[in-house]
Image 1 (tube, rainbow, N blue to C red):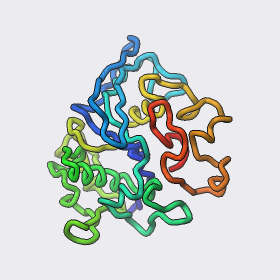
Image 2 (cartoon, rainbow, N blue to C red):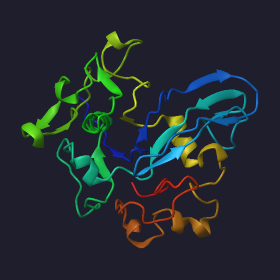
Image 3 (spheres, rainbow, N blue to C red):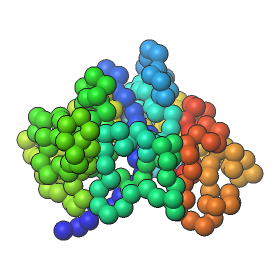
Image 4 (cartoon, rainbow, N blue to C red):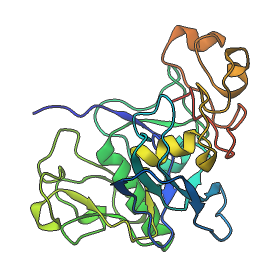
Length: 263
């Protein structure tokens, strides 16, 4: 069996996003200009309200927003920070043999890491259920991760913590074209928490409908980069592998922190 690679849960990388009525993206060929749309009510605490847009003019150096390709990003709420260890550990445990440590950065306000994609969708659904939202992810028709096959559980009752399988699992991997083909699928009509799509993440990093062409999220100048991002010029980070508490640098134009650097 192949062991899963661990990713950072930034509720972006994962920055979390919340569905509105529908967060489904559509892609088609076209050459018309871009348009902005998708008004939203008040954003929840810790989230930023982001208007949607239709993009077809292309963005320089982007492999997503290509000229001649019309892509619509629906309005959404985006977490203004990477998911923290404190947020993650409220519902989930770390799988495998590794957990956050002093060597890499540990604490309630540090970003969560040693988290697989399986763990990320478990977290999203458990948090959605706890907050009375409709979960996005499902295996078959089941949206409660506690009932998913091969779920890993620690403790019982209200204090139970969960994570996904620590090895690649055919019961979780989606390989077909419909909900009956097995694996984790998603209902983008649901209003719960989910991971952003690749296009949504880049849209958020590029300041939304402004579609910034900056080299980094927040700035185009290397002389300003340390104001927006942790990177190896910043002392400890040069030693490799260390992360920092969230939101200690400047946000980008949407008010999102750590879109460059940190975890």
